[in-house]
Image (cartoon, rainbow over all chains, first blue to last red; front, side, top):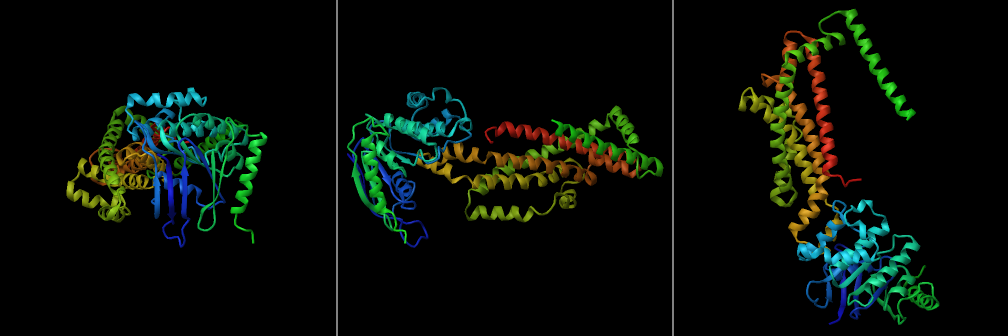
Length: 248
Length: 249
């Protein structure tokens, strides 16, 4: 079964017009979709609607049922959002307890992922002792340890420096490769979209809807500086330019 | 380093000058109303040797801890109830807001009528002093949890009880602990006030007795003790605070 959203509409309470009006997208199983658009286009709002953090005004969000001990959806926020009073292990435990994973099965969920992102020895430190990039990796591991059918990422690497961003993109790409997790990534970075996405959706207009959709058929792993990624990034940028409000 | 040493020097000089001037003035005037620092020190030594100093400190501390313990339990529980929000708890919050501006000493006349002279009356005054800050901080800290943490809890599907245990409670802890520390400070000032009029032991009672017989050096010994005990209690509370909420920056 495929995850899809149909005719999604949403207005914030008290606002005089909706943020999103009639957004429909289909997410192939195991694919990554990048969502781009001007600031205020409701990209983060769309993710929150998909995560069930905000109520839909109209339309529907259909998430495929997940096998066994997974969750339908998990979210990586723009900030790492690790609870500062818990250790890294405590943060994983909290999420896994909420997901109903038995205490004895929890470490097996996050340990291989934490090793894979090169943070094997931070399990027992508090988030305050981590750098921004490390904390964001822990945030990604927390979401993936829940084994989500759909992983939502809200500009996860927006706040890290460019060199680190390349590394984190490669890490995310490797974590998602071959898995059956469907990812939806909100980003401002056309190159990030070209490196990570199979499908690009561009939101625009007032209220927002999908104004352009591109598919990215490049082999993986992709070289973020290679000519094919650059060509795709240019295509995305021109599509995005069409969605920008005219500067009159 | 030089800065800190310079500051220490200034502090020592200031204290030296004030105590020296006090000593000089006291000797020049030679009236009972102004005992010399040297007389205060010898009185302190005598009171300590006699043992009353320690029994008075012990009596005051015992009253503080009894009243404070009751205020902590009730302040934490009712503060948590108040944090639930809703019309019924709005009444509770309004009640505390009404009583709060009345200082603990204003309760002393009623307290003596209700509980007589002695420990229960002092416990009550301590309770009144410590309760408000504990209640208010608990209620306020639990209510104003950072929405980002609540959103995270919601995103992983945490239920209300797990969210309370792992998110709301620890997020509120720094504010709650600060309320307990403020409450302890007010408990100490309240017990002295209560003992001035309604007790037969304790530091407050002792300075009042010294006043009656115009032993002003004894009054000042008591005042210094009150200050030092308050300082020590706050330092201990601060240490405990740092250990309880050691994750705060």
